[in-house]
Image (cartoon, rainbow over all chains, first blue to last red; front, side):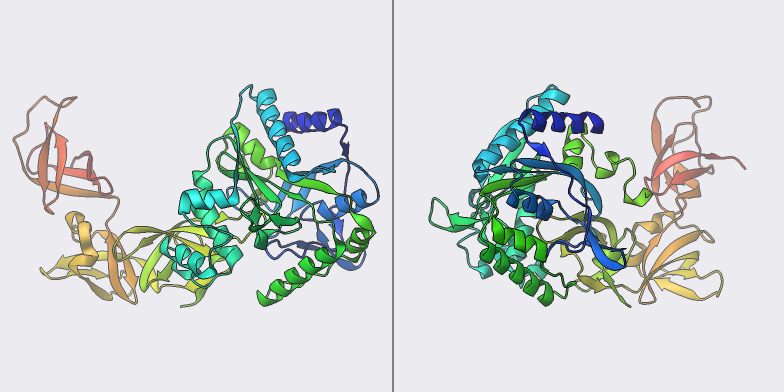
Length: 306
Length: 189
């Protein structure tokens, strides 16, 4: 079924005139993201990294005028292994020029819906909800406006006492993962307007209630995180600020220091065109299509057997 | 005891949680793509037997518990304590009624049990999976009724009551699965 799915995805993008690109897996730099660890390697006498996503190379291509592009290939993340994680996995990532996040959400929905139709001949329900509404409906709290202490005590009250002094982003991740994710309805649910503190490389804006939120979304398939997308931040100076924040946070958390990729930053200064981009976990989509309980059921050679 | 980080968590590992020794049953890795990684851990409190679920931030560490599982021979009981002996050193340990728990229903002298020691003292006792015990009280056996049919309660020499087939009699020795308290078969001597 993996072959069938990969063929379906490629056919979809060919039909949409989105060009497949083949970015490198091995590069001299990698992401600065606080919660993503790169796997180090040695090549040509220097230390380098296996890529955790094709994002930086794809954005360099976009900056040089590549147009709508997608990549379907392997990525690597250190210390991620579990029923939904394997350190090497297959990621589908694509970018659409001059689209905002909602146009891209609609395409994620068409693609996943179409996959089920083509491979399983079933129809799955599609829905959207804002991050704020998720929290208000399930926990009765506004995740954007609530004081940090309120989120911390909620995390504690839910039976996780060691969370009383965590950061805002970590408290929100805990509450979302442990209390909200399992409550999401069946089918594909897309959560949009993520908190500003979890903007990553997405733009921010004021939501309908005037709160500062990020233009980032995530799609969950039957309660399992499947895709993460942004209306991309294109301002090179703001990007630089985000990277510097990452690096500071990594220092505070005693994590491996990562450098800002100078080639990527140069490309951003030349100008990333207005676009939205999303990354989708292909192994997870396969898990859902086959009702697999563990990612190891859809990967022929998971890490423990490599 | 040393500390264990979440990436060393595996089932069977004994750790301290809120002052009680616990055994890890399951450890699930949870991570939002861009977010903080967690370990959703199921543990059994070894004092109370209760199963609890805790979510740790990945990379956090907790104190190990000085808990040791050891095979020991059951010697005797004196009403207050049950006595066990390490087969190699002949060192004896006394287990309280709390530590013995339901295991007392299955203890036959000389049987080898698994004794869980916490800070050197018995915390719990696991009887052998299968024990052979004599029936001391049951309704008279029905000859010839050896095939299917009903069952009847039988009291064993240790005080446990199990359901046995109708053909068994007082004085018969039977094999019992201590995990389920189910009759396994008759032991012919």
